[in-house]
Amino acid sequence: MIKVFIAGATGWAGSELSKGVYKKEDMKLVGALSRKNKGKNLGEILSLENAEIPIYDDIDNALSEVDFDVLVDYTKPDVCKKNTISALKKGKRVVIGTSGLTAEDYSEIATIAEENNSSVLAVGNFSLTVVLLQKFSEMAAQYIPNFEIIDYAHEDKIDSPSGTARELAHRLSQVQKPTVHISNDELVGEKDSRGANLEGVQVHSIRLPGHVISIETIFGLKDEKLTIRHDSGSSAEPYVKGALLAIEKVGTFTGLQRGLDTVMDF
Image (tube, rainbow, N blue to C red; front, side, top):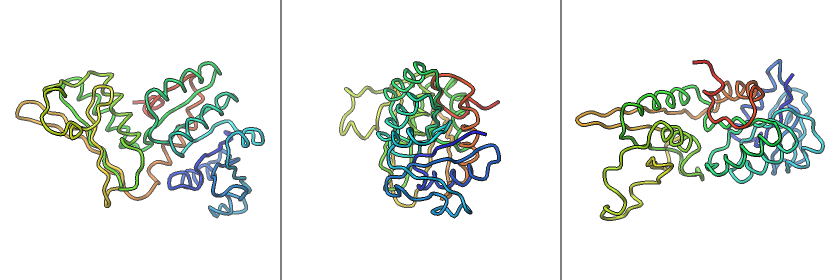
């Protein structure tokens, strides 16, 4: 039985995962973090039969009162980093579903995980189709040295680029850095129009009503191009299965691993 604590348990993704963990026979949802619902019962909020699942507003208070094995975090980047570090220092394992952490954040988290003989599985997106997009894009990047990323989301998504885009840029940069045809110094006009440079990869973020979450990698060669794209719907259901797998697998290694595919069989 894996005892699970979910930070951001009443949010869009966290609430669906909370229901998924509650229904899973080999998992037990023992607590939650939600500042606006401090002191309430998550079971009552999510209509989980007669479940008694206490809600806390601070990870340190939760760590002193709740016995759990795995923290799953669906909060904000700064809150997630604090939650993760606090949990690791207490020997807990962590699954990160929060977007927006930087390469520097992950470097610090990796060190702390190693020091405490614990583990962190950072997943920018738990969707199976996103996992496949990442794998296919890595394959294409081996052969095509010209590529950029476009990241789409709704107008009120505050992290830019998204965690999915950051993770994809990181992965592609490990395959090879894309060719730079015109340097920033040579550009004429507004240099910011070329997007953000993440580890050598250009990333463009679009935030508009009508979009949920989409991402595409665009590759180009002379007289031909390849586009690999993922589009999500309005439901958080596609992310639950991947998150449950991450909870099961986060205890199979030590340190930090990035991406759901690192614990999947391909």
